[in-house]
Amino acid sequence: MVTVAILSDTHGVLDPRVAALVADCDLAVHGGDIGNAGVLAALQPRTGRVAAVLGNNDVPHKWPAADQHLLDTLPLELTEDLPGGRLVVVHGHRTPAKDRHAKLRRRFPEARAIVYGHSHRLVADRDTEPWVTNPGAAWAVLTLGRSSCIVRRWRHGGWSLAVHRCPAAAGSAHRRRAPAR
Image (cartoon, rainbow, N blue to C red; front, side, top):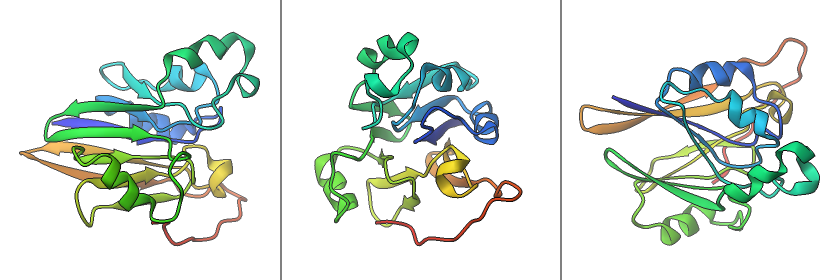
């Protein structure tokens, strides 16, 4: 079995509940808007493998000076060849929201799954291949107390997705929104 933790939009703060889910995975994939090097260091999958892309907020003036050297090492997009197919990761800010999933599918037809961040809205579109997923935001403040991520598992010749939405933190207001397409 291979497990991949998919998260995005931490903006400098990783929800410890998401970090705990990552610890049980083989690979952690961050879809951008990381915020600082400490977030990537806190991602501790079993193998130690962490992959990440730049988001629109991953720019020098928004990162601590001591961490800015890391920005030059992060790509705008990445691919991971995994059992069962290729995973493509982008932040999403370079693809307009209108018909975003169709645009991403046309741009990456060779992918088995595409991950994007940016909107802070959790969505798992498995209607057609490649699957298009957005793990939402892995920092509770951005999602009214409900951090989220996705865990992708390869087992017995097929992929499955498990959506994880953490319970709202005590005292936080929360409202439900329809997933963005």
